[in-house]
Length: 161
Image 1 (cartoon, rainbow, N blue to C red):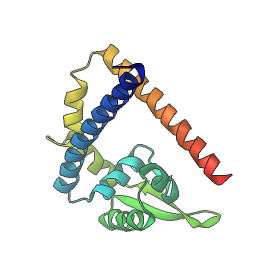
Image 2 (image 1 turned 30 degrees about the horizontal axis):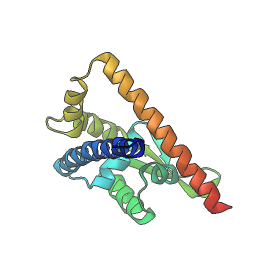
Image 3 (image 1 turned 90 degrees about the vertical axis):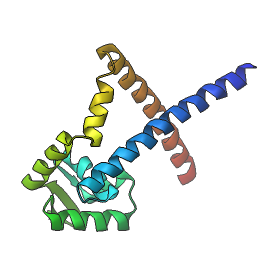
Image 4 (image 1 turned 60 degrees about the horizontal axis):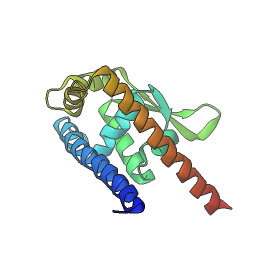
């Protein structure tokens, strides 16, 4: 096998590896969402906001990559359930700020502790790694993520020129 074939095989193997991890994660995310009467978009939004306590709806959309209509509908359901609070940003009537409610924080903590949920399952996977492997994995993921982000930004700037 020549150098280029080997190089592409490495990238294909890595893509498959990420795909397999993502596929399995999605199974548990779907299960966790369903077990808690949430849609996957609602779960995704709640987890995004929980780690920051508050975010604008626009920021949540950028972070989750959810279409605006899906985002809006999912946020409505989370507000109605009492998990999120929604208010206009002072000085900017068009921007909406979302904050996790006390009920929402308790709900997220309960989901984190839920047996068979994504958080417990992922914790089990993390415990298979040594501290060194864990740190190396985070480092490698950051390098790959930064490279992909840089290339995506380059493509956008070329497209916008």
